[in-house]
Image (tube, rainbow, N blue to C red; front, side, top):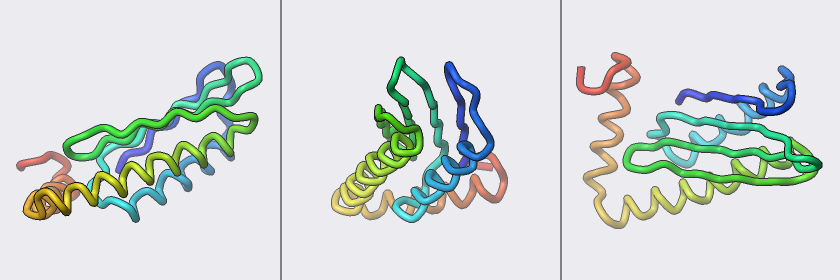
Length: 118
């Protein structure tokens, strides 16, 4: 899983970046085949905004949270995506269990070679 974190309209500190990476890495326990995570941290007047976009095989999950504190925004954005991941994985299990095996096999080939299908 690749994690990209950007700060918009403010200086992103190393401590905040490490905190966000720690929170996002916890999403791996809900779904194995996460490809990419993009977190955009922004300030809008007095609100701190965290926008998280998680790409998994077959779909992209989004969440956007505004609050008074940036860490709270990050936590809530990760919680929202976690619930979406749980729902997505349960739908996959119900609809087509063979697709889950294909996704696991596909993700294994990406980790080994770096490119799918090679």
